[in-house]
Length: 386
Image (cartoon, rainbow, N blue to C red):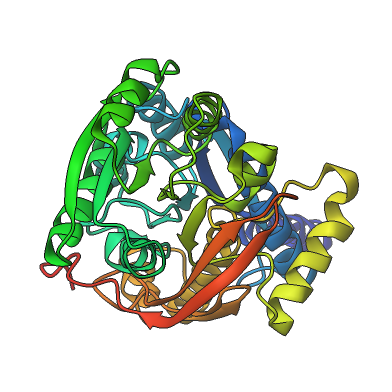
């Protein structure tokens, strides 16, 4: 009887230990709501690839706190309605531990109330119009304070531009970026002679281009929803014979390459170019090529912040010693990661100082580096958040 009782106790103890071990080994889930369809569908695959590489690298070295990372990807349709479904699914059905995503501003704004209800850490990895603040959100991509000046200053100095025509997608990113640009042009002594918008899903720019021709500006600056609208607008500008200096506030390097000769001469400003000659960037590009081979999408200023954000989340969880939001949130402001763009720390009102690059698209789709600007401050973004 004593032996039987001991055996039963041992079985019970073993079962408990197995259960505890299984629980300890549960993966840490990272949700990625992203526009696999809609305006962002052109660039979304590169963002997912970057996240996949980061997770693979981290898991190969033992994961985070002894647990593996697991990605959960949901299509947000690049818009508000799809984002609400994607965020809800990831938080309440997939039960993710954090959200890390590149999205349109419309999708981000729609998802933030769900993030607040779910009380999860959220790293937003897309460049955007600035001043979006939430107790659960951090941003590791650029804002207008970091991105607009290089393009405007270049056109004024190198192209003697004094008058500008602005074209954008009619939502918070397009209007927010161009509002900042208009103010900056005015401060520099220039003048905006036209400002036109199409809905995010708009594709016929004929009327806008006719107004552009009538205004006869010295330069054009555009801010459309990343991806498809960039392609349609640029194609139609070229078909209409527009050869004015052209600055694009919303194009990533991958999309610029996909445009082919239509993008030649376009001036861009961002925090990442594949031509960055650092050891970290070379290692990153080699790892991406090894993992994805012929299926590799061009790494860019939307995908690289996604890669780095996974590592920033890892560092915050390790510093916090747990995945609990109340511990990870304060840690996110204090950790850093040296990646393809250099050292990234979201320490300025939940945003990151960034080295910015001014580049021009070449005939072969490559980007010629014109100038770089070290550690540009994001400015006054979320002063009321600690």
